[in-house]
Image (cartoon, rainbow, N blue to C red; front, side, top):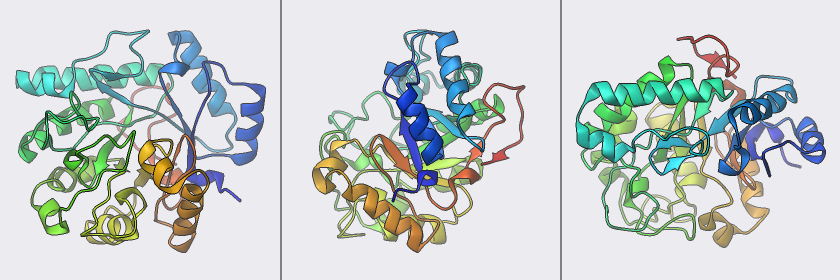
Length: 314
């Protein structure tokens, strides 16, 4: 039996169907994620987020991927802000802050409360088709801390919770996890010297962390980082201390997971891990799984109220 409170679910189209509404009322998922296919106009998008909110007995997560540049789900209804590498190349903190604030303002007005951004991956392989070209703030950890941190600070000031990704080191992938599971020989010590630094530096300001669909056999020979007790529980939760916030997998519809585990086993793995230790992570189709009680994620207000600096526990 699937525990809906561990799931973020997707929607088929721009309007909530009767069948989807019935399913969501029964499952009571932790929340929902919208994609480009769900967004036609500002009024329609706000109606959809309002409809989804009305199905839940508690304030749901209403999430989107809005990084700027090519990862802009609202590009059909609003001009995209510059991409992270374009902003980093300008080296203008005022412009970066404005981009974060504009992102937060738009998402709040559309009814969202969580943005799956910023990307904190270091750009190890800028010319590799690993899904990250045009998305990373740079190769230098300090530059990523400065620029991604500033951008995230300003979207949070505008009432949108931020989610850093893809922990622990999505930038080390040599292939695209949308199509297959990348493998990286790096050790935990190597990751701590570079890739994990932006996460630890910005951790006090992170509302959530998304896990990478990458395997690190020298850290966990059995599971990808997104499903690894060693990486999620012992490293991220216990060692680094990210133990009171949301942790979630990347999309379980990605080839990295469907080709390795197939349909159903991924959900079972997630459920087993989560029940064994409430703060673990896992997930199902077109969803991400959440650790602990997902309604403790930092989300802002109801997605449409006045700006607030306060974090609401979900």
